[in-house]
Image 1 (tube, rainbow, N blue to C red):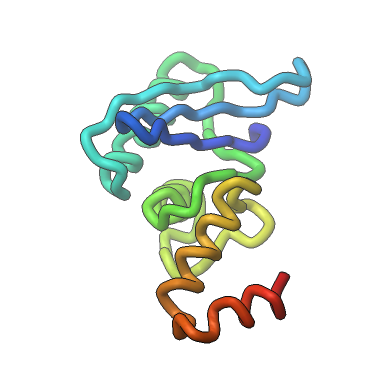
Image 2 (cartoon, rainbow, N blue to C red):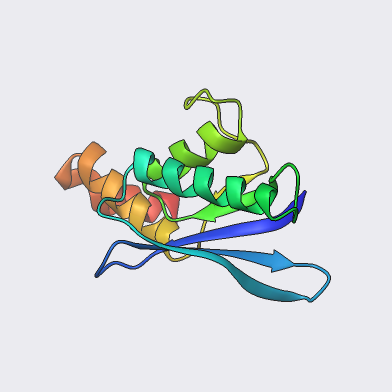
Length: 130
């Protein structure tokens, strides 16, 4: 099993960058960069499928897997890694193997608060939860 995989999307252009923390080198290494037209499940699955096929073909790793995944809060990211490396059931999180970064977590929370909490209660909700 490889280290943690960090999946990042460029917000100006749909570029997927995959990085892994290598414990032998104690560094974050780029393992893949992919230009995509869309930031959806299918384009990410295509990238992961191509990546795993290439790694196997080159004889680097027979069964590509990662200890975990750090992605932004877009559901497509979680769906893609669950389909490729998890149970294949998108409703079942890979407990202990998937997380979001500290930058995207508050942004996601803010988006959900605005969508799910009545406007007149949002300020009180933030005060109680933070």
